[in-house]
Each structure stands twice: as structure tokens, then as C-alpha cells.
Amino acid sequence: PPRARAAPAVAKGGSDSDDELLALPPLFEAGESSPDAAVGMRASTTRTIHREGGWSVNEMQKRNGLMARYMSHTKGGATGLDQTRVEFLPGDLRADGEPNIIRDRLCAGSHQSMAVVVALALSRCRATSGSPPPVCVLGGGGLALPMALLASEPSLEVSVVELEGVAIDFALRFFGCAGEQRLTLVEDDALAFVCRGEARCPSAALIIDIDFLRGCGPPDVLLSAEFWSPAWKSVLGRQGGGLVALNAIGAEEGPLLALAAAALAHARALNEEAALGERPMAAGVLEPCGAADRGTWTGFVPRPSVLVLGPRALLEVLAPEGASALEHALKASPWVRTVSAEFLRELSQGSGSLASWRWLAGGATEDVR
Image 1 (tube, helix red, strand yellow):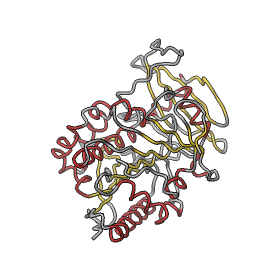
Image 2: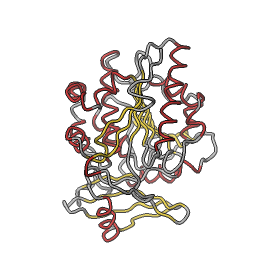
Image 3: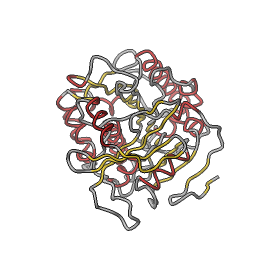
């Protein structure tokens, strides 16, 4: 049942904690060619403004004069990279004394690419129903992506499922998220939330911003029909946006392929059962290329990647040959050219941290007929 924490309302789920959900994805700045340099700068200029329950809110001065605020989590004695990062102009404060967060640009490359996925899903929704259905985000952190989407799309609603109450409190208190009426926050195990069929249906997109694949295989439930049947039901069909994106940072090839194959197999089963007419379906991954694809990635600086699944016709625009189609598809969401500027530039140039598109699951397409 919903329980009041601060505006907006936060619903408390009934499932037990899942330690795997504590390891949210570390991030570094979109467009940063040297994560190591960013880490070095962070170590010398960061100050912690609040700490609680293994989580901390930190700030650092950037070379361009902006301030960056980010959330980090310590687990087992190890502190990861920032899990969400936002920026603000020093001295630009709201009435409550907190900074006015810049919402027309996302810092993390993964979030920029996911914003493009949402824009593509919204273009499909507008073509069939006019008004967009909500977006569901699993894994909240400081809510940089959900808040950027809400600031960009005045009629959009976003639901976020976050396991850690501390992270939700930090987002409301330190990341400018309190008072947003179109944002629904649910404190719950994200996978259990979907398995119980609680994701809104229809949804424009399902964004999984939790690093389930970093250094290990996905949890069994993420391969199961228990998860994928309600997940696909929420985004497929006439009014849904059709797309799922998952933060696959640090993923190895085997688990990535296994997850994509399982997801598409469950899409096929659902299509046969419900006659959704969604075919063919496909999966692909956005990953580093060019100078950004370093020779050695580490546990502290894992290899970034984003898995995207959905109707092949929507995914084709992310492939190199789909550049002109991507340009056309994004016309209905002009905000994305600013919010995701670095990602779109790198994708067009074919060099960057998420600038390469690679089809998965046994080739370009997994047909669900």
C-alpha cells in the first residue's frame, strides 16, 4: 500500500530485500574519453555533504564551472563510481535552498542512450494513440533519467521502482525530485514488482537501470516467463511503446546473449498466446567502439553497454544504416537532441562509449511468428 514519505507519494512493496539490487550501475560522464582521469579528478575535489546507511551524497567542482552532485554506495568495504550524477550552477538555488538541477542534459552515457530509447517508444505511441502512456524505470538512484524525461515531456508520467529507501530519500532531499506530481516512486524489489504484474499497462518503455549482469549471470527470475510475460505485456500491443532497455554495464558475452535469447523467447510465447502481432522482434546492444573501447576494463571501471529489445522496425534506426530513419523518428521529441547530445553525436560518428550497435540473439532478428 502507498505510504507517505514526501511528495510525491511513495508506495511500499511487500517483497523482501534483494542484495543483488544494491549494486546499482556505476557511471562516468558521457563523452569522457578517459574514465581514469575523471576518477582522479573526483578523488581530489570531492566533498561529501551527507552520509547514511552506506550511501553518500557528494559534490565536486567541474572544470567548466558547474557543480556536479552524485550518489555513491559502499558495499563490502568497496565504494563504486557515482550511481547518478546531476549538475547545477553554483548559487542558482530554489526557495528551499537546494540547487536548481539542470534537466535538459543527462550526464551518464547510459542514461542518454536510454532517453533515446524512450523517445523512439514515444514516437510509436503517438502514431497509434496520441497521448503517451507512462514509462516504468526499475532502479532509481538519484532519478536523473526520470526527472529529465518529465522535464522534457509535459504530459508524460514516470513510475520508478527502487529497493533502497535511503536512495529514495536522497533523491527527494538532494536531487530535486520532491514535488513532482507526475512521478510515482515505489520502494520495492524491482523484479518482484514486475512479476506481480504491477507495471502499468500499457507502458511506453521499460527501463532496467540496475546492473544485474556486471561480473555475473542474470538472476534466474530475469530469464523467466514470470518476469518477461508481464514485462512484455506492459509495452507490447497497440498502445505500448514496445521497447525495453537494460543497463548491461560490465556484462560478459555469454550472460548477455542468454538474457537476450530468453527475453525474445518469452516475447514469442506471449505473441502466440495473445496474438499481439509484434513480429519480428529483435535485440541489440549499444557498446564502446573506437578510442573509447579501452583494452582493459576493470571492476572499478566496467565496460559500458546497454541492451535494447523490441520490434525490429524500431531497433533498426540504431544501426549504422538507420541514421536517416533515426533522424526522422526523433522529430517528435526534439528535446532528446539536447538531453542526449553526446550520445547522438558519438553514434553518428561511430566512436564513443556507446556508439556501436550490434545485433544479438543469433543474428539480426529473432522472429516471434
